[in-house]
Amino acid sequence: MSGDDDRAARDAADSRFIVERLQALLTERHDAKAAEDAYRRAILDLLRSGAVGPEKLRMTAGELERLWWPEAHKKRRRRDREQAHLWAFDDMMDYLTLKLQSQGKANPRTLAERTIAEDFGVSVEGLRKQRYRYRKRIAGM
Image 1 (cartoon, rainbow, N blue to C red):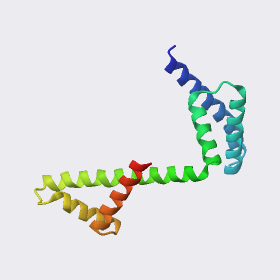
Image 2 (image 1 turned 120 degrees about the horizontal axis):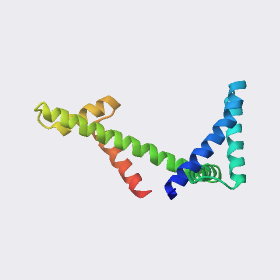
Image 3 (image 1 turned 30 degrees about the vertical axis):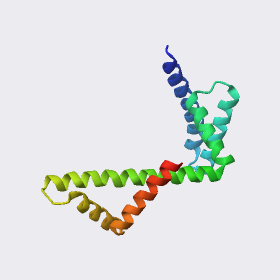
């Protein structure tokens, strides 16, 4: 087996371990808090076993980061959300521009900007400023 196959097998085994632990709980009752607690205990048991796959280690490290440095986590979440908005704006802009171009409209990019701005309830200038701000924050982080 290659290293990737070993890693995939270990991650699959880790996931099976967690799922089996949660299935017993969820068949008895549907309590979200209890399920979350059981999930976290299963992760702890995996960590203590010493045989943890890389995916579960990354997940655990992310959870610890979130708990130990909540402000940094909030900033990263905001950056990710802004990046998703920027990509959505850009994708919508490209799609509408191509659609308007195929219809033979003059200034398809400007028309696309106007349409998107109206859909989001902002002015074209406001949309441009928002996209600029998102790009600047994403590049700076």
